[in-house]
Length: 117
Image 1: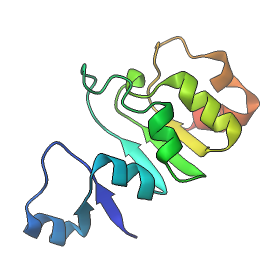
Image 2: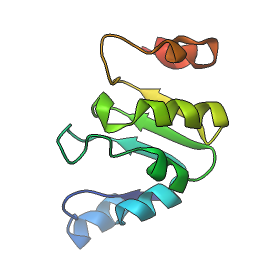
Image 3: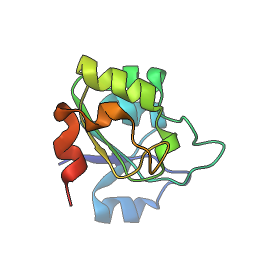
């Protein structure tokens, strides 16, 4: 498996080699990944970091996993992309307005994602 990452700071070359990972730009990460995992804190800079433009640059059928904070991903854009099939699956540990979850995430199509323990 090829693993690429984007972070505020790049690892040292020897660390990248030992972990078998490659640093890429944020845009290249979105364009070239089959699975996009979001693991960052919510700040003014990360709020809405994944919106329509970012989703449209992703591969068709991408899997999106958000274990950061809900507002990092624009839920309206995410829902639109799920229904259109642009995003094949979404693993969401967090939501924009917790504990209130938008009704569409409770629809049958997404139910297995909500019941994972």
